Length: 252
Image (cartoon, rainbow, N blue to C red; front, side):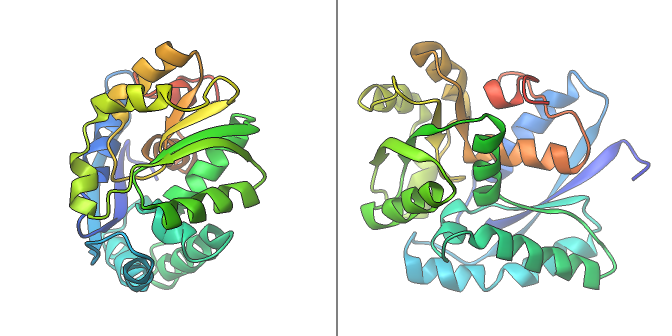
């Protein structure tokens, strides 16, 4: 890549509206302090209700989306649904990333592939986190799948909450200003990192700095972790103002 403009591709659930706002918001904020520029491109997989059967059906469409985005010669692809990956089986992010990456290679448009699930796991490792507190919008059975998935990756989940919002559109309308009070009901004091949104559809970016100030803990979200992994995949400094500890430059 010789250009200073990078094409960001996202594989997005059809009902997701947040990743096409939070990822651009972070990378556009970065443009104010670094020279690189970004454009944003999406392909959609059908999904309305956050249920295991719908998530599996949606994941089956991800290959088509990777092919479409590689037609646009994007520089990196992000699979923007954490729970879809985590509900498909332990460590499935590795399988998904390899499969979708191979599709870009076969289309003569080789590009790294990030999943929000893999990005969250990688971010926790980069931050040397051991004990985690998590906020999710999912129903309890899916939340337990997410918790088990993250535990399997070597982390201790000391507390979590399932907000039990079944309709994916309603997940996006959950007010991020409510998140600090929700965190205060959890055991965050013993956590190394707080995952403010283990879901790329539940908005959290406006509250990350506030929760860090409130708790004195590093705070990340699936969207923040995805942005970090995308920047690293592009060999760019993973720094974004106002997006919390992970993108502060401390983990560059």
